[in-house]
Amino acid sequence: MYVLGIETSCDETATAIYHAEKGLISHTLYSQIETHSAYGGVVPELASRDHIRKLVPLIKQTIQDGKLTPHDINGIAYTAGPGLMGALLVGAATARSLAWTWGIPVIGVHHMEGHLLAPMLEDNPPQFPFVALLISGGHSLLIAVTGIGAYQLLGESLDDAAGEAFDKTAKMLGLPYPGGPKLAKLAEQGQERFKFPRPMTDRPGLDFSFSGLKTYTLNTINSTEQTPQDKADVAYAFQKAMAETLTIKCRRALEQTGLNTLVIAGGVSANQEIRRHLLDMAQAQGTRIYFPRPEFCTDNGAMIAYAGCQRLRAGQTQNLEIFARPRWPM
Ligand code: KG4
Ligand code: ZN
Image (tube, rainbow, N blue to C red; front, side, top):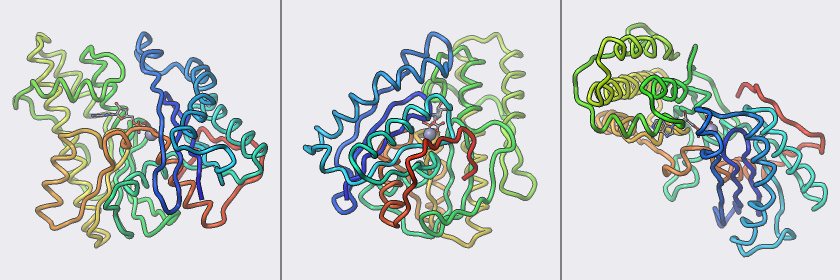
């Protein structure tokens, strides 16, 4: 079964083909960074227009790269939400139209389920059950996963998502969009100087809150002369506080559930410092830990093709109504 995956929830247009037995066949991505960078963030209307321009050529290319023809495709999966409504509708309408034309089933996939399952695309995939930490631009979730579709929410962010906190802090430091990776780069020049709070780690529970950390960071920035070294030291302290907070919560989630496998995914899981902290903790505890390759941490079509393939194989399909949900609990 060849499944075409389509991702258009935010600022990446991405497509992939996943085969149930052969694995990932091909994948293509167009990033809209240049379109949005002049505005310091994603402009929803421009995102939709770019998806409209790029999606069909990308689908064609992905099919060609896989040395396939449209007749070979057995199912289509697209991101139905959460995300920007206009952007989602481009993927939803295209997926439904192609499915109708080609006479094949279609399924709308939850974007965070795509992220959650991204480590399954690697050679040595995790086995169920596991604890998953999903850290992206819109979500910070801790989930107990016992199988495809069997997700129990353990904790979530009460305010900003981890990626959002990275991006807002980057903006405060004068870094251009997209801020997260730029802040990580700047932190490489930083030194141990400021000690930032580890929010909500001194009380029980698995929820996160990052808005206080953001305010603390802003106050620290304002208390310095904002020399390049000051900024690098702030980036260093912020990133370390993030890494330690996420690590403490993951350790707690493993203890609470009695599980011994940890999966980390979502855009922020590309962060090397966060990976290092989590790896150290996992190693010390004898916990198995899994990350997607960096290009599948951030938004991509492969994770949607994979998640859709599992759901279609389980016999789940949807009718041809256009289905998109900008807000959609997992
Ligand atoms: O998963 P993703 O690509 O899109 C969403 O579903 O939101 O995540 C994007 C987020 C952005 O906030 C971006 O700044 C952050 O992931 N990000 C990073 C890094 N790479 C991406 N944050 C910190 N360090 C990185 N290396
Ligand atoms: Zn994402």
